[in-house]
Length: 109
Length: 122
Image 1 (cartoon, rainbow over the protein chains, first blue to last red):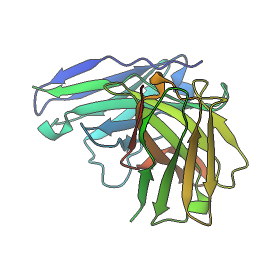
Image 2: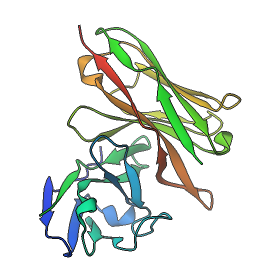
Image 3: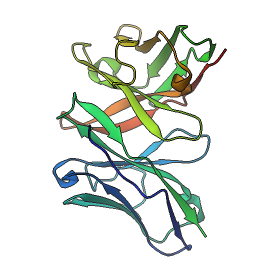
Image 4: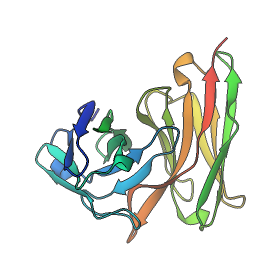
């Protein structure tokens, strides 16, 4: 089955840029989606199809995907961005299951 | 406004059964494929099951295949998850999530319910 690997944690100071990676075999050939989840809340889609943003998501959130790594970039990080972030793909080669990465805890110092 | 409201969670003994429901409103439910996603306490997200808009296509995660059954009633704008032979490792918050469609292509889960907690314990 397809595996997505994320770092357990990333720390960044306010105003700096956070980069959260998501590794997978030839992930560049798949569409990657990213979710933000704050404690006690449901996940929220922040980037879809590698780099598109749903309406209402700040431009500070962006994404890229190439080779074996997809990246969620959060520019000018704010305290309110502190959350868990998950990458996700649709593995059409494996019984069409949706796969999530293990999640990354973003800490704003 | 799109709303997804789950219900039916609770405490159940190992080997028992539970049926979760997800009531949808604010959009044409019959036009969208839907999913169940769960999250064990303190753990990450795990996709559980998918059902197409017409119920013609259904997928399950290996961890629940043969024990869980996803279904929907488009006339009632409702999604269901019948869970049988429950195990301790099925303990989680269960979310229903709508598939986003962009020009007819499914891409990401764009709306989620607030979740319902299922606890499997004796």
